[in-house]
Length: 261
Image 1: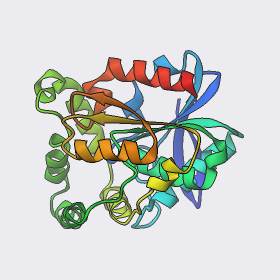
Image 2: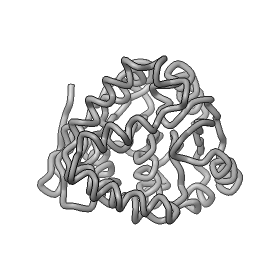
Image 3: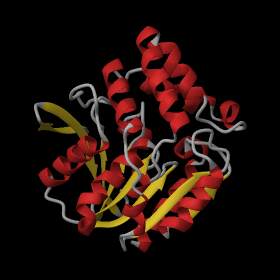
Image 4: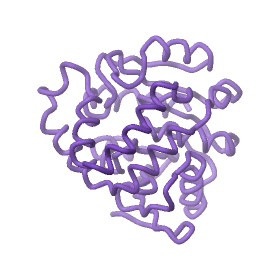
């Protein structure tokens, strides 16, 4: 069952299930907390699992036209303060990883572990920034086609047929995202800073989950990032959507990471 708090007059929706050490799940761009539907039942057997809808996604409201990573992270902090939680493990997928890093920058003493799942502590390169500006224009002209096109490019070459049903369901959730939510998050990602130092400079457990055929994140750059930030690494053979393309393996990896923390 979804719960909610009010943050700066905006509704922030989240779920809270299980007992034990706290694991906070933060979804990616054009996703919401439903992306974790196959993950939460496994993790909550031994943990308290919080899954939060970011601003402009799922059942959470928008708050202006730029959702920076810092603003997103403030909503995470507000939920965790509301629940009176002091220590936790963060797992962020894609955009969720950027948000987790912004949160960790200010709350490192509260974090037992941070997992970047198909995500990075690097900033956008100039090519990616240009693509985001172009997407902002295109989405205002034809939101549905833009979302469908963007979504199709997230998967590894062998996944589209094998996981067609799950992909279709995830796409339907993506299409529920309001245009304002798309634009605000897209701009926030475009202007986010490099946060390599957040990983490199802290002693909490760090894991980066990489898709070897991720169309969004360059595999070789991910390898360099792991070395630069003294992080652990797990490599899956598919693309950007490990929760769909590698569900069972992901559950095993997350359980092991939680135990390590």
